[in-house]
Amino acid sequence: MWDLPGAGIERVTSALAGGFLTTAPPRKPRHHCFLNSSLKREIGTIIRSLGCCPSEGELHDLILEVEEEEPTGYIRFEKFLPVMTEVLLERRYRPIPEDILLRAFEVLDPAKRGFLSKEELIKYMTEEGEPFSQEEMEEMLSAAIDPESNSIHYKDYITMMVIDEN
Image 1 (spheres, rainbow, N blue to C red):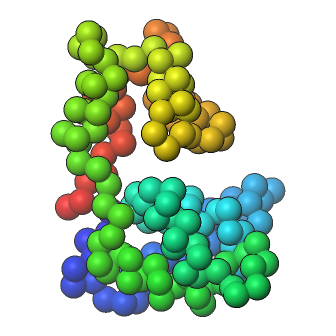
Image 2: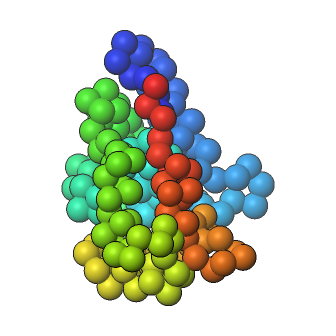
């Protein structure tokens, strides 16, 4: 995570440019990112790669703020940069603290086993609250599930997820 208080605007903008341009591998692009624009659907990935954790509702509002009046499916970098710079400097969309994440997992694990099965995790994440999409669920499972036990040991997962803000 960037230590933004006191960071020069050049540092913030170079981080944004780097995050904006590096979402596509140099060869065989997976995403259609261009020098001056990015696909609207990739903005969440770009924002999260900068250490921000907006809810889907907050992300939707942010996209509306930077989208063209006549939506094209692309977000222009010139519109994105000042908005995202302000977000970073104001330290908006902070990640959820480790202790809160642990308490959330413990609510889902009333037996206090220290893990959830893959099936339990899928059920909670796709049927409760703000449901994950299939793509989001697959991404989480690939990072969270222990292949030997086919479960998520949530204390280990939380440690992996937490962003060091120092």
